[in-house]
Length: 87
Image 1 (cartoon, rainbow, N blue to C red):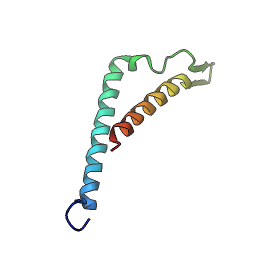
Image 2: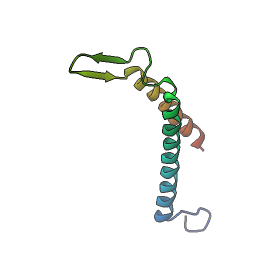
Image 3: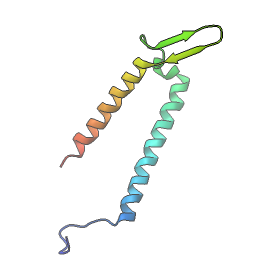
Image 4: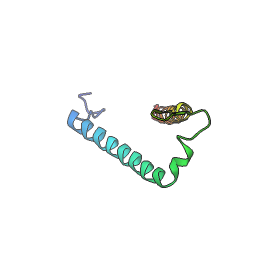
């Protein structure tokens, strides 16, 4: 508001905050990938139910169970973020 009770941040400031958050998320993902490459990504990609087909000339792999697990984890994390951001 204009009378000074509420302070509204300028758009460049908001954009700067958004860029910092995205940067931190990218750093976190990078650290997980680096740690996962050393630990076999904690078994992800080799779960029971992942589809693997190999023949002499064709190889096909679809990690459907891994996708479901990662989707559930992402949903949980986003739900927790929205839960704690509520006023």
